[in-house]
Amino acid sequence: MSNLSKAFDHGKAFVAFITCGDPDLETTAACVRAMAEAGADLIELGIPFSDPTAEGPVIQSANVRALSGGVTTEKIFELVRELRRDVTVPMVFMTYANVVYSYGAEKFISICREIGVDGLILPDVPYEEREEFAPLCAQYGLDLVPLVAPTSEQRIAKIARDAQGFVYIVSSLGVTGVRSKITSDIDSVVSLIRENTDLPCAVGFGISTPEQARAMAAKSDGAIVGSAIVKLIAQHGKNAAPHVGAYVKAMKDGVRQA
Image (tube, helix red, strand yellow):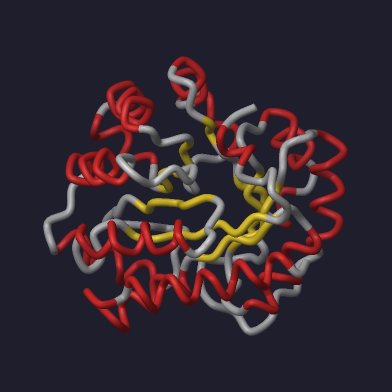
């Protein structure tokens, strides 16, 4: 069983996302440690990209801030090396195909393995094109985590059968961001996934309150939160870590009640 799947072994999981380098890498490191201490079961590290098509305004702005601050993929690899001295929580990179291509796919994926990254999420790579990355991920023991949207319909069963690590369910159409209400039919998506794989599945996009996290975790194996955390960091800047820790703790408590 992979480290990502194991993240769901202790009941419902809380998955936290952060954009690396916003406002700087020191703050990212402090926030990741705070999230791990507060009970995050899995941490998604966003590698900034100039055209993050799946992201709403909150994470887009974080990408812009990080890139204008001089963040590079190389520096993020160094950050993870440093974090892995004491952070044991499973970690995945979430980024875009271009970032991996421009670095060199095999080089990128082999370094992920070497520094202790457990998986890769590429929201702009459709299921039909995953073969460009899947063999390399398999070669280096990295989980290529798939995204399933309510619109994936006939493809959900196929995607679930080929999934690795866990299945990331996109709760609603459109881009990431905080939403007051999540209306998609998550139940039918989850039951289709469960018919086709034993891997856990977690719901993301739009979750921001402990109540929403609890509701989504009740329907699946966990909740994923990004924009709300990135918003806190935008608000508190270099002093964000304690605020992020307190927020993650509240969200984890919400998920535990599912």
